[in-house]
Image (cartoon, rainbow, N blue to C red; front, top):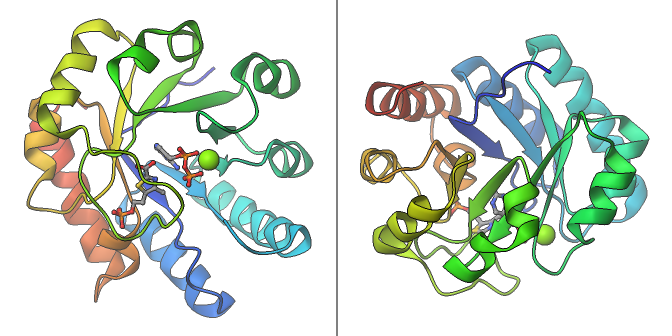
Length: 213
Ligand SMILES: Cc1ncc(COP(=O)(O)OP(=O)(O)O)c(N)n1
Ligand SMILES: Cc1nc(C(=O)O)sc1CCOP(=O)(O)O
Ligand SMILES: [Mg+2]
């Protein structure tokens, strides 16, 4: 399997229901250098999710960038995406792995050091620190932010890639990477930017100049 670059995950904004706007922002993120796309839909029906996933896959394939589906293994399998991102209350890791297969990317959210030390997190391809900072974007059960101290504690015990999510922007990215994250995952820093392509480029440059990417 190709080495996966976790530097900059653009997580799509499910508050954008207009497909023209949604896909224009997605393409801007791809042009700007997002290294992974995560399609996250929390409230639409399955047919709508599936149709968006198909179009996302076509666009990601054009730019040769992996597509990961948030939560929904059935959509990931139906569209044959590169992976899935699961949370602590989503489909269990073992089942996700059995259904997705060995070659696919599986990410798992962790909200404390105990979860990061458990076998599911250790077996996943990467973990998402959930959240690193406070955010208004996630409206379904945001955990207590881990902050930089929490990231450092998890880095001590976790050897695989760590991606941080929640309240990340161009002003706090450098600190996150300096303290052990391999990459960042963002929604609003790209989707709500005046120029999403330029915003993506700027975030990517900060990650790459700070880390070893
Ligand atoms: C990279 C990354 N990390 C964490 C999350 C959060 O996933 P989850 O805990 O399942 O919450 P929802 O996104 O499903 O609301 C993520 N999506 N991506
Ligand atoms: C999708 C998601 N998951 C989170 C978690 O903590 O699990 S925070 C989040 C939203 C991140 O959006 P923004 O970059 O706009 O803060
Ligand atoms: Mg989830």
